[in-house]
Length: 278
Image 1: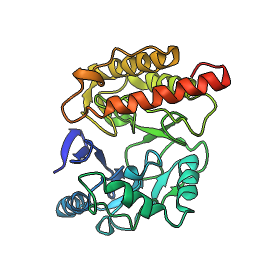
Image 2: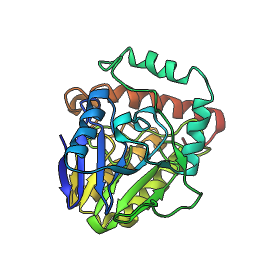
Image 3: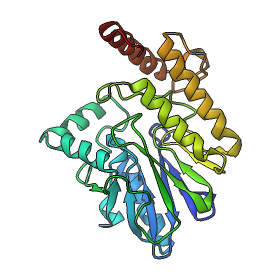
Image 4: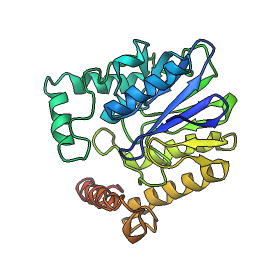
């Protein structure tokens, strides 16, 4: 079920990890951002759009994690965009002929095993490097690219609607998850990304994270500061005072503490090996 969060902007929240698909109405159709996870949800989204007389004229994946690269035949054959670095990462992943099988195997450990459509995974069209806006006939969607959570990660700022689609950042349930594989300084990369998001925060009325609850204007700076405090604590080797981990985590999200422990250990090993923070 689509829910309106701003004029011409609707979301669908998946049952899996509170994943948020975002629909932005344009003149000739809709822009669909990170469309969803389970097959029945994607089909329902396609049906809802069709029933309202809307077609998908463009798609966008905020980053190259599998759950942001999915699609459904009923959504049509519109171009699905990603940043140049995101698209390169996807091509690299899919160069492994067993890539989809690996994802399916990983999903066997979850409640959505066998329910994720992988046939159209990752069919992303690379936008030229430094592209500033999504090329479509609708409200301007500014691309805020950075190197934080994943290669070529990008938030979209729908300026006319005051909506920031943050990808896998600024969540109220997930802690910042750093890209610990592809960058020399993941801590500074993340802090730099938060500064970029902070530069538009004053104009944001609605914040839509990739996973978690939609936030209002009063939540934007608060979530940026919470994520910054978490990352700085990681850099200093401290245990963060963060409601998303430990006993205060929301029910069903206790596993986020394991994510935190894992990346804290990896950063500690990296620091010991290289002699640098983080």
